Length: 561
Image (cartoon, rainbow, N blue to C red; front, side):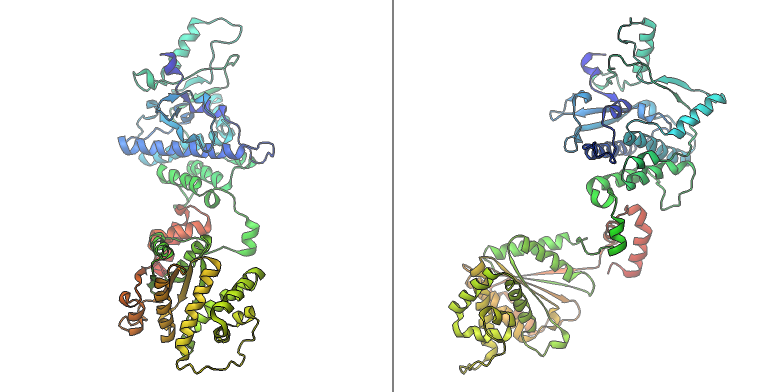
């Protein structure tokens, strides 16, 4: 074995002891959080490697209690060369290079298929216990080993000494001991190629540690994870390990028990990808007071949200854009629009939102007036914004601003007027057309005053009145023509089946030739069962494996609506 080759791999048990012990309850252990993430990634890599071997070769490792001594760890550098693992500082953003290899001796055959699967999960649970405890073995296994020895249960056992060191400081090298040591190291050769050998470099002065017995009969015993809980390991992770170890007594029901290593791997990956949901302990006090929070994320609508964002960006660039979201009642149209408005506000855009009411269809421009007036109410909260808008409105609209003040009470306050005050009519023949014109001018003033694109969102378009749709058409037309100063984007929602697509109002709204606007329609269907399962899982902060039955029940009741 060459010196270069011997520096490349070490047993997992040695690697674990080289890491800082995880103790999240110790304020002085400031890096324990990083160590937890590193240990979690190492565990996930191990589960992934087992699944990979099973998929590629069809073979599974044999259940046994000494897996931790028969798994090799090495570091993969950027140039694809394997380096000494002890020369690498394992940090959360660097430990993706830590790789796992399973020794061939783990792949013996066993006779009971069902028992074999439980045993594999149990054996991996013992390894995870060691990883998160800093290399300690469960006390229950130590007591069982002592009990077995006292009762002479050592059939086919092989005594192994951890960290056997024939090179003790001040001592001489015993050739016989060295031969035994080399025989032990031979178990870690994965091939005839020196590049796959393991590193068993021992620190000077180390002596042999406690004796470990490898039992070919492999009898599982119940193991508690109290030590991990005492060290502040997150409850979800403790439950995962306890679940794996509870295969020994068979007390878990079907939904709770792991049936495959791939399920373990998937749960660990979720903890890595979304630790705030699946790893870290939840604030039970807040949950008991405020209850579960729904609607904090978009599920199954990312493609639709991207389509709306793309249209908005085109509008910001100067194009005139119309996007309508449609679908059955309850499919999340308004929620998707709300998520989009967050994106607009985060990018410095202006949102004006209104909602048509079935009971106010006889009141023209009600939703538009509500949207613009609400925005004026926001401006009232800032003195500087209020003053800027008042100056620009008086300069651009002059006396005509009084007509808008009757429609928008908050604008009247900004201008220092009394809403619904008596205004002398100048003989305008069509008051609706005048208001449409003034609303367009109002949008232009807002856009130029605050140098931001404007998005108008109107919900429940199926109840829109003709005056409102005509006003939207004018806004789109003027937004396209006056694109040098005004960037306008329209987003609307309506219920599928409640709008006659032959209605001339809709034809005018979506008629590109009339308003020179690009029209995009986004249809929302009911959520797929898998998407609903993810939503339930993340809402409850539980693995999809544990919420599968509940998700299935909800889906069959609601069909994803």
